[in-house]
Length: 134
Image (tube, rainbow, N blue to C red):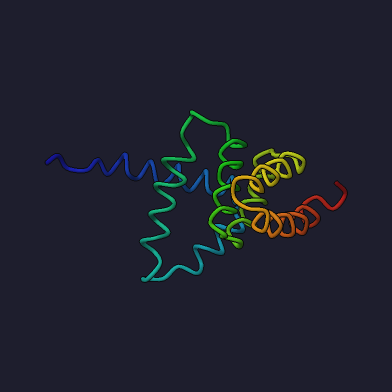
């Protein structure tokens, strides 16, 4: 079995950290890094390397599309804290509030009206915080 390429692993992790900071914000990543301990550090490395370094960094979809997919997945799974974080990320990635609304309307049909109702409540609050004039 060939040895793992540690240079590539380090590069993927570094790219993952860069993308994670761009999408979620430096402040979010700093909070997550400050909270990690021996129990959570392997998980933090896993999401940085694979979610952010391998998947979010792929060239096949624009970040706005990745955000739309992620918002839908958070609604479908009922991951409300993650939904809040990814609404902020979607705005940072260039999605307009009207596009987020359309994602939530689509989710109402395919994920459930009650789930979309919760998402609209979270979205309304987050958008008002992030875009107070818009």
